[in-house]
Amino acid sequence: MKIGIIGAGNIGGNLTRRLTALGHDVSVANSRGPHTLSALAEETGATPVTVAEAADGAQVVVVTIPLKHVPDLPKGFLDGAADGLAVIDTGNYYPKERDGRIDAIEEGLPESRWTEQHIGHPVIKVFNGTYAQDLLERPRPKGDPERIAVPVAGDDAAAKQLVRELVDELGFDTVDAGGIDDSWRQQPATPVYGLRGGVAEVTEALAAAPRERPAAHSF
Image (tube, rainbow, N blue to C red):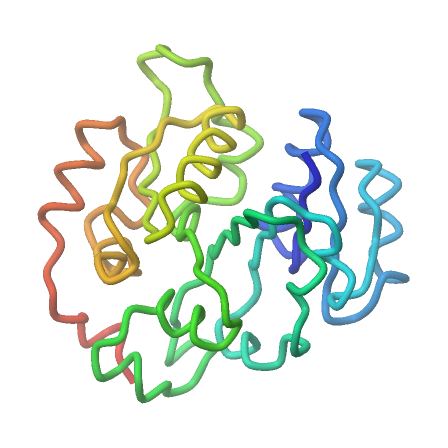
C-alpha cells in the first residue's frame, strides 16, 4: 500500500520504520525539507518528499505534527491522493507545553474535528496516546495475551476499517471508539491515554472518560 507520512518525529519516524519493514511504499515529509530526511530514508528505504508531495497517490496519509502547525499545511496537499483516502491523525492539543490557546478546542470542539476543519478531509484518530517506542518494541501477533489495543475514532466507516486493518498488521488490536465527536474520550489526561491494555481494558477506559477537559490540559 502507498502511504504518506507528514511528520518525522518520534511517532512519524517509527511508523516509517515499521511500515517500510512490512513492505509498504512509504513517502515521508517534514517541515524542514527532504534533504533533512536522508538518514531515515537510508535506514528504511522510504522516499523523502516535500509536504506538498506526501499524499501523491497515497491510500493512507498520516498527519503526525504539532497541532499548532496543522493550519500551516499546504492548501490542497491531499488533492493528489488515491480515491478512498484514509487520513490518520495522531495529534494532541498541548496548550501550555506547545500549542498555545486554541479557542474552539477550549470551548469543547474535539481536537481531531478541529484538524478536519483545517485540512478539509475526514480523519481517523489513532496512535495519539501510544508511546512511540511501543511501535517498535510491543507489536504482538493476533491472539497474544500481551497484545496492546488502541482506540480508533472516525466517521468514515470504510476509512476506519482500512486503518484498523493497518493497525492490526502493525501488531496491535483496535477498539472502535466511535465517531470524531466521541474522540475526546482518547485525548490527553483521559483514562485510555497512554494505557498499555488489551481490548477489555481499553473499552472500559473509553467508557470512563470524563467529558470536562482537565484544568491541567486547558490554557
